Image (tube, rainbow, N blue to C red):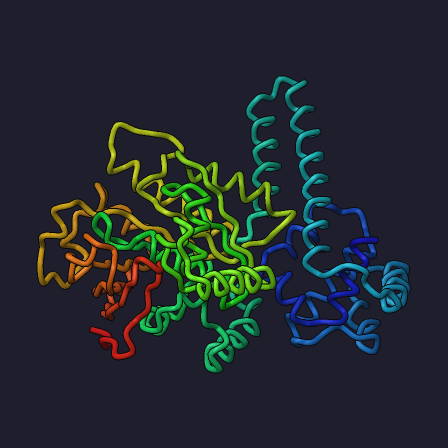
Length: 442
């Protein structure tokens, strides 16, 4: 029944057909190695093929002619037409994405069973290499089914999708998640799915505050779900910082219970507003995390919540999945692991690295290459965008009061384009705001 509901969705919305084709699931579902005729699989294939040829949903008028070819017998065509009439009357009870996920699981189980059975049979015949090959094929196929970052298909299959993507870009609909910093968003087009964004700064120059501001913007102002890995601050401390930012109140007075009556009312109003926001910020306070443990936690939560961005505070405090004797290589492997998580889940990942203390002494630098990038240039190798930040009036940091002027240098790693802007940071309120008059792209 779930396969029929999938087809019912496809007959109602051509966008879903494009999603099926571009995801590569079409070839997995049809499975040319399976020679047994199935009217469900046949109708599914006809719908996809008709869409690829005419960019339209296969309707009742065109189905008899399109199905009548040398591939299907008269009896098979008849069963396809009967199935079409049956499915046309079905009103799907579940959303398309839910059906796709369930169908993938069902199909993956069958594929794995078949390959394992053949592999076991080969093993019983002492054909060890053949058994290994069949088992590897089963595991590889199942991984591909669930790997949303894997795309396959001919260049012609996605013509209509590419045209639609261009029109969306033209209308501004293709903008990725905004960060809350207009210059960053303008130069990068937003934080795109699968991208790794790295913030660099010296000690106590605002890495964690900037990451919190981005997370708050995405969750509170854009209504999206954020997975926040807090490797530096305990969950309770991060929540207090969040409340300080959201309410616009002094974090130290909030911590010590010294708010004025007006500020207390402001704090309670902020909490009430927070309880009604559509987006969620899920905090995972887990010291000594690894990319693998982060991915495992996301797998645990995926039946409860889908996330739109991963924020890791911060990369330099994580551990590699497999440690080496080389710190440079370890940091690079952590960056690669985070990027792969974003690619597989098709969401952006933003994190930070701490530069060496001597980097704060270097003045008038215009390029992040002049920084000592926390042991490893391979962090940049795996990043799509790097933003280095440096406090221009460090004396403010001694008191934590007043507004710090932070110079931000943005570099897009793929093409080397850069831009600068200034951030005003009120660290006591955990607030970072770009100045209205910002620098132009270099």
